[in-house]
Length: 112
Length: 114
Image 1 (cartoon, one colour):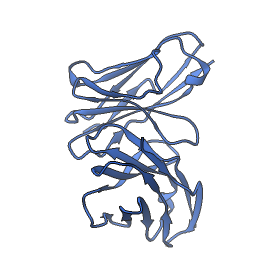
Image 2: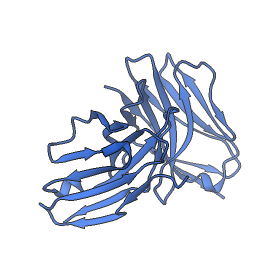
Image 3: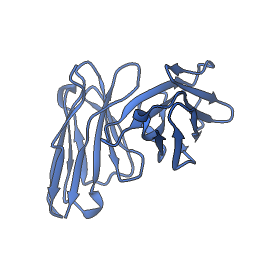
Image 4: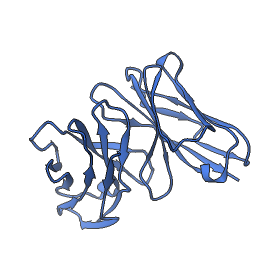
């Protein structure tokens, strides 16, 4: 069991560029979650997958955000036309039938 | 929509003492799960303890226990025999019954002093 991994760990991009993050969940976990966390705040729910199906998406997400989980394994989160307000830590978590979430180390995004 | 409130932004405790972190939540659902997560300074979130809403018995995990008051919508975390390694930010989290969206509080920064 290698835990949840995320890549890259850090990303610096210029405003207007597109970025894509990857999350590899614990292999036997069928649920996968994406969160955004800013300094001093709790994680903010973005979206959730059960296997390959995206079952819930936060209304806070604009059309610039999209997530996929092909074949129910790894997931990608893409942000198009990045804005300075997108600067945050992006967390991925996975869970099994017990529902407790195992978090990855996060991807820190800085938009300049 | 669910809300989770942690009213103590910062707390400190002496090593070996006991501390209680508060959490209240608001929901109209009857089936849900509650969690406490710990985020040490390295920032990777770790599960501390979980509680199913349908269970009346309070969950315990070694030095960690909860006081779950369903009617009052309160879910506090008690840490006994505090250790220096308990220094972290603690988040209370609500998950709805279909294990989908989770709502987190804004956290309590706990410092354990030697």
